[in-house]
Length: 143
Image 1 (tube, one colour):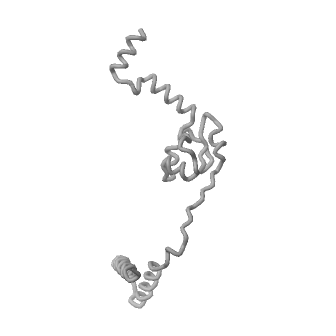
Image 2: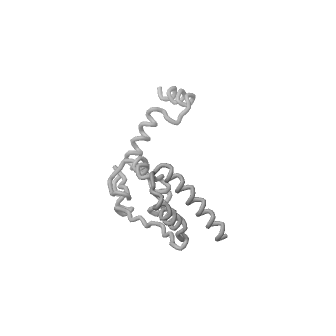
Image 3: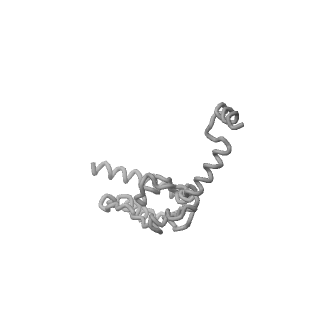
């Protein structure tokens, strides 16, 4: 198995260096040193290093982030937002990853309550979610 990983490192070294040398001029006396350093960098024992997941510290407490009905305070930067989705996308996160990062419950909202109520009212006014038939029936009964 060690032989197999050694040949993988050698093959990867050859691929990297051939791509590098084809695009960059290099004096021949520096080639040997470049091969040694590249091979050493690729064969470093990465398994020996323990991968500790990064611990993220929230900018504000979870309770403070939900204190106001007008906005939600981001745990990333401590700024208020009506909706966190676009903000999270800017940081390369999905709502699920955000909840996981800060150990939030699945019920943690991504939209401020007042903004959610406003959007709900607009949707109800426009008849969003109802079929045409149901809207026609609602129109007849409201007259």
